[in-house]
Image (cartoon, rainbow, N blue to C red):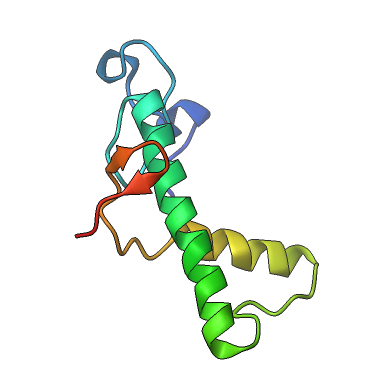
Length: 97
């Protein structure tokens, strides 16, 4: 059974976020603006990885079926396997570990 029983269980307590609603996240980030920057950097890196991998293989890493499973696989790829430091060094970039 999930530890989350209500919608508010998915959020950090407002006293930890300056009174703003922030989803619990793998980065432990409680500032929504900073979280947005981190997510932007990570998903940009992962989308570049996806394109480079396809170029090296000569075929799509994720088969292009254009159905719900296809979209789910893209989402999974973009949102998993953090291989780089998620803290952006500036808008749109991340620092190498």
